[in-house]
Amino acid sequence: MIGGVLFDCVNHFLLLGLSLLTTAVGLYLIPFYKRAVLLIIMMSVYGASGSIVGIGGNVLILDIWGHEGAPHMQALHFSFALGAFLAPILAKLAVGTLVSAENHTEPAFQPPATNGSSEADSALLFGLPDDMNLFWAYAFVGTYMFIVSFFPFALFFKKSSRQEKSKPSAQEWRRAEYHKTLLCLLFLFFFFYVGAEVTYGSYVFSFATTYAGMEESEAAGLNSIFWGTFAACRGLAIFFAACLQPGTMIVLSNIGSLASSLFLVLFDKSPLCLWIATSVYGASMATTFPSGVSWIEQYTTISGKSAAFFVIGAALGEMAIPAVIGIVQGQYPDLPIVLYTCLGSAIFTAVIFPVMYKLATLPLDCQ
Image (cartoon, rainbow, N blue to C red; front, top):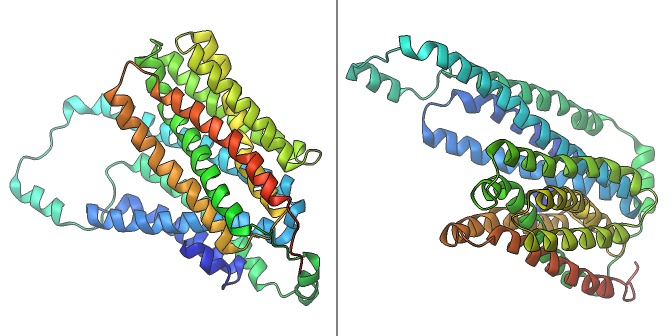
């Protein structure tokens, strides 16, 4: 919410650069904290700066390209998917190295049993982490973000009067007749879409092992194919967006999500069906969010506060739906609650989009 207000008041490049720099500093400092309170504070700062970066990318693309920015929007969200795919691999490599080292050294290592040293350790606020492999994983990603932060700063300090003068006439200001209603519907659309996406991605491994009876290696592959097809289709969507309208891509995504989730519910214990439907479901979910942002910009101009509003809807869905479904699935382990959630969300998004389209295509108040 704060980021949306700031992007309407502060230079976009300056705010984005500061947010990236804050995120990089947070990644450097997190491994050094020895007290939980300090770690919680830094993680909160890190989360706040990360959310501003997420909003800032969408706002910048809409501000620069407007309703013609669909391929750029797809490229932005492909980079999110690619980073989400690569960062855990880096962390897993670090953890794997650590576990291997612990397996060799654990029998010979005995921690000191004196109360004095234990109290001294607990009194420390900062210190070198015991796990240096994980520290280097944090430092690597932090260094990358630190370097990237220079680019928006460079654009901020670059004075270009020609671009500033041409900017007001480059993009027409539009406002749909039901602007606020559209934003509220898009809030709900993203709430259920992102909630279903994160729920399935989070619980597909547990579901496959406990309900479908898969081996852990097969379940891990099922998880990988979901996120793999998700990232791959976001990359392909960069090219599709150049020849397909955002609304068309949303309709195709909704059809794919609805068909695959229905297939999952009907054949929930068939390994072959789980593999096929999971692949289709990941591919169908990939383009919905960036296409939704590009679609709404065609009918009504999106400011920083407007972008923040529907991004908050996505964040709430990402936070609330997996938490609730995890509790309910635990209470009813014999029912595929996760799959029912995906099917229900697919039905909701398939129904709500035609309503949004009808409201959006009513006469515009052009100014």
